[in-house]
Image (cartoon, rainbow, N blue to C red; front, side, top):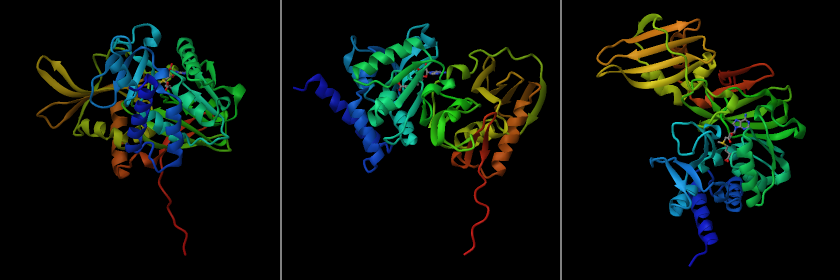
Length: 398
Ligand SMILES: C[S@@+](CC[C@H](N)C(=O)[O-])C[C@H]1O[C@@H](n2cnc3c(N)ncnc32)[C@H](O)[C@@H]1O
């Protein structure tokens, strides 16, 4: 009969095997072998509270896990590809209160491993982590390169205290600071790597300033449109700027200061009405395939607050996209009426959001529908821009 420790080891091996087969930590890659070793030595279950909310990444429904009430389901969730929500509403409500937004979690193993690999850490690196959460990823990095080379910052004191307890239980001791990660941790700079585990739309320049030239910042870049995030890897240059590439999808809870409003002001009764033959579902479906970054490049303040079927009058359903300006300088509604070719547009404010979205979409089509790998992001001391890489225009002659 297996001991509890033996059963935990079996579960860890199954998770490591899953991540290898999913191509995230492949068996033939030495860097992945190091992260699999970290998985074994930093048991995930030590970072999960007895009562939490599991968000499986497959089609299984989200659910409460409770170690006392149903230990089997708790262990199953902890060692499956699930994010584990550990806090909602900044701690103002119960973790099972799904009306409140999730505000802290243990990231799902698949995405956590993708970001850790993107980081490309080496033994001699000093790493700054933003968003300690449960402490799991800080502990993994600490195991990999040494706890004394890792600084992790968490904005929520309660979350940070729980992380400190988890880290002690796991025998790990990275430096855990409470504060706003947007400020970095200047006292311990410079860093070779910055590992960001909360979503950001605007990259705080402090992270660039506190990194060495040649340093790397990885972050979930949550596009201004708000429907989809991207894995961003930035290289820090010796002129005080950073330039980066996008590597895949990501959905993360936002850094506190960059959250979108949960409630927007009511739509005014009147706006400028027009029609277009462009069906809003076309640009919407293209968001994940590069257009989201084109929109970030050409209309960086346009945010999509909802998109889908809405009942405008009883029994009358229309596909509706709602747009807002992130600085509240405009709004737009695009409504595709079933059975009619046209889309009705109403927009108001100083910023004509639908016009900007349609222009950006036409530009993206004209550019040949470039996918995420063609886009770049540059951060300087006073600006941030997404741009399309036009490629090498001339080749050396032989
Ligand atoms: C997805 S969780 C972190 C996951 C964590 N690395 C883990 O695997 O356990 C994101 C965390 O970022 C924290 N956070 C949000 N805004 C922050 C900020 N401005 N500075 C530092 N942490 C922040 C949240 O409180 C939350 O705990």
